[in-house]
Image 1 (cartoon, rainbow, N blue to C red):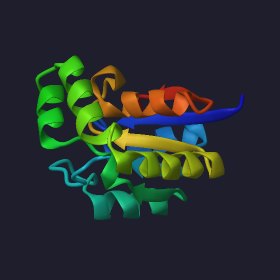
Image 2: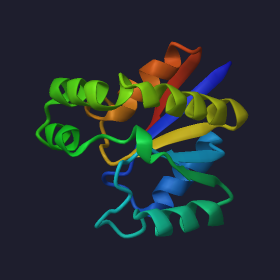
Image 3: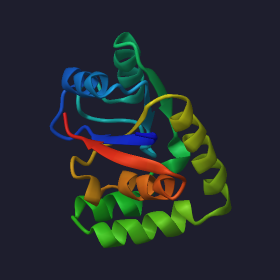
Image 4: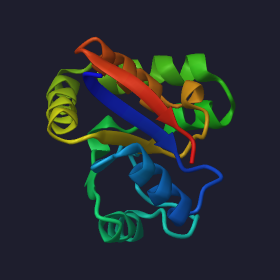
Length: 147
């Protein structure tokens, strides 16, 4: 099948359903692409998420530099995917530092089956879709998981 990148949003999931979905898909690394890896949902703040993922036999990496700035998160919460995409590209992906962060993500995804994690259930309303598109240009296919 070639190089595959998975994505998942934890909205509506609990940690057990998340790790089951990742395991069933054959994911080896969960790449947390939230700018702020805190959550009011049990088990989804960085420390608890990392511990739960590792207990399920998977690796965890927090890629803060690929997260959405506050204005982008607000646009996503307001169901304005076009504005979220514009903000995310201008503030993050179209900057000099993003090339290195994307290179790191691509290397991770080539080394182990990798899944991008953010909150939004619908990938079309989340910046992980934009990240996936950038990696598709590098030869990856995208598979969205829903748990």
